[in-house]
Length: 483
Image (cartoon, rainbow, N blue to C red; front, top):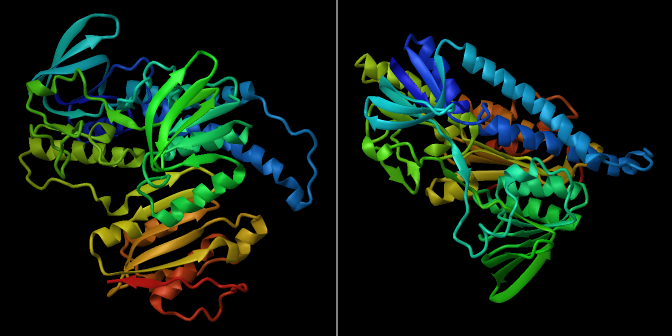
């Protein structure tokens, strides 16, 4: 078969690209070789994990009922029913994606693809057959796979992966979590809510590496308060299992330590899934294991694009979708000899971690602003001094704004606390239109709401006196600048 545009990988990036390319008039095909169709987010990532976490959050809320004058007797959980709900939801999401792929204005080919040359891909059908397809342009969107770093015993000790945790029919009595990124922290939060004793062993100096230290510290303190053990700045030396007990041997502050548990979770990240694609046959280059692309999602072979986790730089589904759409539009323009190719704007990059408290960031963090030598101002305000969060008894954390010192344009924001995943989007919209702190500060907000907390750091950065604001005793003033 001959096409204009062929996509290898039918996850979120691949589907977005196929829909965009077909809508622009390109004869398009999607090659998908996974046993299940839907992509990481739907099948083994965002959606199933959030379903389980929602159950955990509601169970934890029941535990806090007495604070609100409520009495709940003999609260229990049923893992089988929690999993059944998760599976039902994921089956529905996946079926919808399958229908989108099967009924889209493009061909849907079930098999694995590998490049023979820059215009030809060999497809190995799931049924065992083999054929070739040709195209004028391609997109690789094959996603990522779980990483197994070179740690003695890690690959042979029967460690759980995130895939395994999503299907656990029994909550383990105890668990050692290797790693402290978003997946590690979210699954630790989920399992601990149902009684699992958690020990986190992290290589870097803080959990949630890449987030500002002050935000990561709030989550760490909350986890410790709940009874989790956390070790940072470690070096894992050995992973062992005798079939009933698992053991992690690591070095912490120069001291060799051992921790035992019923199970170990390998949450040490994911690697781009690029093996077997025949990239060497077409001159596509890798950088740190990922497909190297330029600002237009083009590889070293200009007619071959890449999007999503296989190329990075961020393993985030909404960015993968944007990359896929951009790549498809750029393929259209390339085939039309139009040099005006689009680039992805990472200025509004978003991260969210669905722990309790939640963490969310957009744009530049304070750490990044310092590293880039940007002349900035920063201001923060705590939830423990905010009326609505006090009413909710959700007082951990804070909000923080980073702004350009001369123009006061908002450059980034962080929130760690209640509903952080929702609150961050107010700042995303403000930043989308290059709003200043003063414009945010003078935007009406209903009282009492969580979202009005953004007014306080915005007022500080803008130099506005909050004459009409309701501020409780102990107001936190934390604006300062970095030259």
